[in-house]
Structures are given as structure tokens and as C-alpha cells.
Length: 305
Image 1 (cartoon, rainbow, N blue to C red):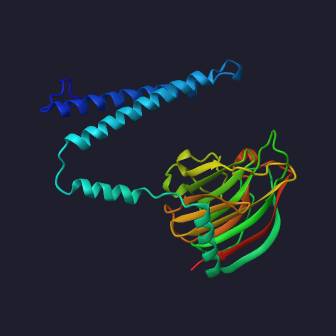
Image 2 (cartoon, rainbow, N blue to C red; image 1 turned 90 degrees about the horizontal axis):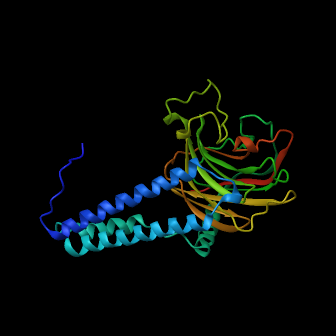
Image 3 (tube, one colour; image 1 turned 135 degrees about the horizontal axis):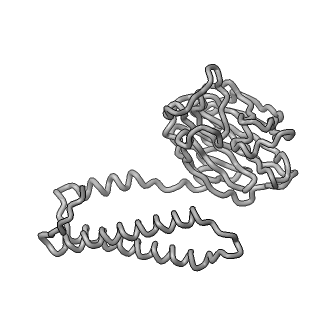
């Protein structure tokens, strides 16, 4: 329970830090209020005033940045931590911050890994049939690999409109809805999700039902964890277009490439078990457009030592 008595500081510098922390909390509360208001009161585009809202948010962020700087500076200048504490904190921070690999270094790494890889599947081709239900159309390799390279070229199933589309890979799939899902969408976006129904007590799975369900399902939101996502420049979303996806997974990291262009480095350290690798489509239920199919070709998997 919060004490109603005002805090007393033995040093004016301590009081300064307390005041700054209080202002930071007020600013965070204000931003949370604005986000809640925006989410619950979406308005028609004709009445929106994005510039004013953007500048309000920018102004709050600037204030937060200044306050954070002042708090940090005050702590560094005036506080007296135990001997060795500061050096240890700096070492920990340096270990936590790992810069993204550059496209050149990734290409070099992928090339080096390819030389040590062994093809264990493909190349194969086929069509993933949309049935309009709540299941992901997929093609399994029946593999059990942790570190691997997978690639495939997908053809866009139709012109996105009333229905969108998506396609990509499931990997480290150990069954019972426990897998990673990396896919791209007709909006030119990509997303990596970790599915784990076993950690969700309220989820129920029919006996013998090992077919992964789409990312939008009656399952609780807690079953799906979004690891990362973004936009792909130059992604072909035309009705007659196609895109080549490549994923290189080694230990807790993975490199994602689209049309031979490096997109990002992914953190896949939360699930390290070996599992199946699959091509799939309609990860999102609304993208499962019955009567259509997503063609793929060149579906290949190489295991890595």
C-alpha cells in the first residue's frame, strides 16, 4: 500500500531524482491514456487530424527523452554505487546490445553455412489448397532438424482485395501447436510468431489432432507470441507475381531473405527443439479463400551441422 506521507530526501540530489521519476510516471500515464482513447475511438478518415496527434505524441516523447537523460545524468554524476557495480553494469549492457548484421556479412555467413549443409529434402513443387476452414494448408517434410536452410518460391494466389493472402514456413514444429511461423502477407509485410498451446491451460486440443491451426483462431491470444515483424521493400503483391523466401536457422538466430535480399536477423532462441519444416499458406483465417490455391516450387531443405 502506498504511503501517504511525503518522501523526505537526505540529499537535495536524491530529491531531484525522486521528482524526475514522478514526472516520468505522469508522462507514461498520459501516453497510456492517449493510446487507450485512440484504440477505443477510431474515427472516419475524413475527420482525422493525424498531424496534430503526431506532434502531440512527438512532443511527449521528447519530454520523456529529456527527463530520462536528466535522471541518468543525475545518477551517474551524483550517486555513489558500490565499488565495481558500474563496470559490471556496463559489461552487461554491452552483452545485451547486439547490432543487426549487415547485408554483406549475412550473405557471407549464408554462403559459408551453405558449404557445410546437406540437402535433406527437395526440390519439390505443388499447390497448397485453400479450403476456407480453420486449418493451415501445408506440406510437411517429415524432418526433425534444429539448424537448417529452407527456401521456396511462392506464387501469389490471386489479386488481394476482399481476401488477402499469406504464405511462408513453419519450423521447429514439434506438433500439438508448438512451432515457429514465419510468413509474408499481401500487404507486403512479414511476421514471426511462436505458437505454444501447451503453455495455455484454457486451450483444448482434440486427441490425435496434430494439424497446426491458423494464427487467428478461437485459441486464446496467449497461445501466440509475436517475435518480430516489418515491411518488405520491393515485395511483389501482383496477382501474377511470385516471391522467393529463404530462411537460415542456426542455434538461437535466423537470417531471413526475400528475393535474395537480406531482410532481418531473427531471434529464435525461445524454442530450440528440433522439429519439422513445412511450407504453408493461410496462416490467418481470413486469408483462407476457398476455391483457390497457393502454388510453390523449389521447396528445399538443407540440414546444418
